[in-house]
Amino acid sequence: MERSLLKPFLTVVILMTLSVIALAFTVDVKLDFIPGVKMELPDDVSGWHGNQLKFCHNPELCARDYKDASFYYNDLEIPDICPDCGSSLFNMARAEKEQLPDDTEFVKSAYTNEAGTRVFTSIVLSGTARDSIHRPQRCLKGQGNSLDGEYDLMVPIEGRDPLTVRVIKTSRTFRTAEGPKPYYSYYAYWFVGQDRETPSHYSRMFWIAWDRVVRSTANRWAYIAVQGEREAEGTEYETDIIDFVQNMYPHVLSETMREKAYGE
Ligand SMILES: [Zn+2]
Image (tube, rainbow, N blue to C red; front, side, top):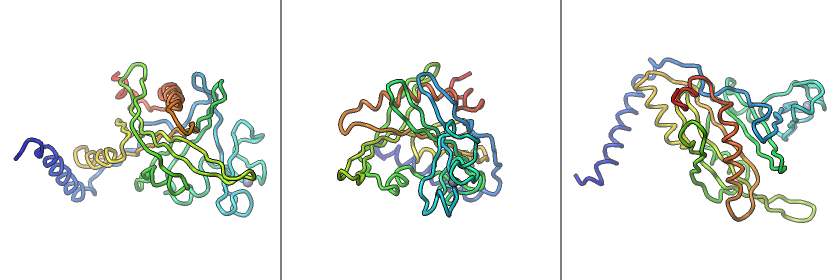
């Protein structure tokens, strides 16, 4: 067989073998509940001031027809109580709560820097019952965004190799009183396993299969996303992604993942 064909061929054989073994042995998999991330976002990270988002799910009032009823934590007089209707607040929107398994965990915050630039960040931690993380591309389209391209971006981080994040450029048009208004944004994300990280959905799928087969474990994967506004042209927004991720990254890892990432 030609050399150029051998590598993809072997990859397919290995993947098929892994899949078969995975199917045969799933019953023996040991669940490991320790995630690679901490499910809390820091109040502030260097240069960025944070404010956690909380959501009211009251189906008759605030979240009627799945309207987004979100509040900034620091603005609340009573923490975790809706100022409009008195219901308890949640860390995720009503639709997310209802569509995903009960043990899926969320945390979302908005961060603003001195220049007034705002980024929204979220961590979704998959439950133990079944994997609840979907391809972000699908969700973004479902929310009415156009996907205008995607690529990998390297974020230099002190004390370790650069972190690769996947960036999707999105756009949509809002109807306003003055007519249609275009809105350009970006969506940057990566996945974190107990001691692995990858920007690729397919690599994540591979590692889930690999861990089931080789390590006989299944653990909870997390999905970290950072989103914000961009200009129609140019890549200036990359500065925001890099600066924010560089500063928030060290705060969100659990001990296991930290040791792995920084080679301690
Ligand atoms: Zn409410």
